[in-house]
View 1 (cartoon, rainbow, N blue to C red):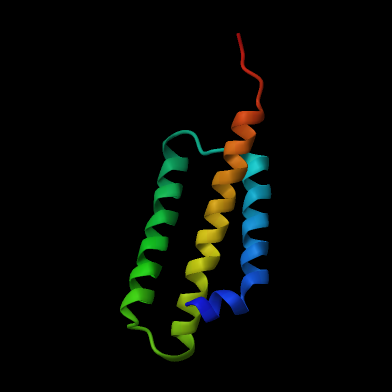
View 2: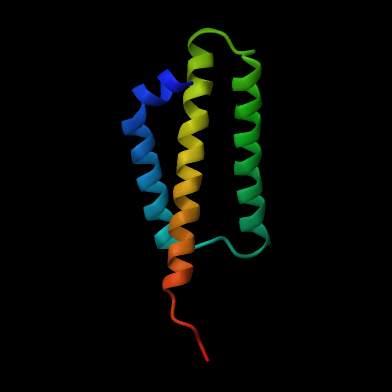
Length: 94
């Protein structure tokens, strides 16, 4: 996994930056439909992590799974950071 991350760091940096921009523009999710979407993305991250750790997908498809896992994690981390920054930047209402 370390070799994969060292080879794909530009894509990971791009996913993190894109996630931060999207998170800053949209903010953190509110309401039930947004929570369901967030939970489904975290579930997808867990499934990809399980497949990558168990190494059950061979060949090129396995490479795609192991590449999608850090990309999705970087994107979600960027979204969380951007949304938190938007929340902290908003002035308090009296």
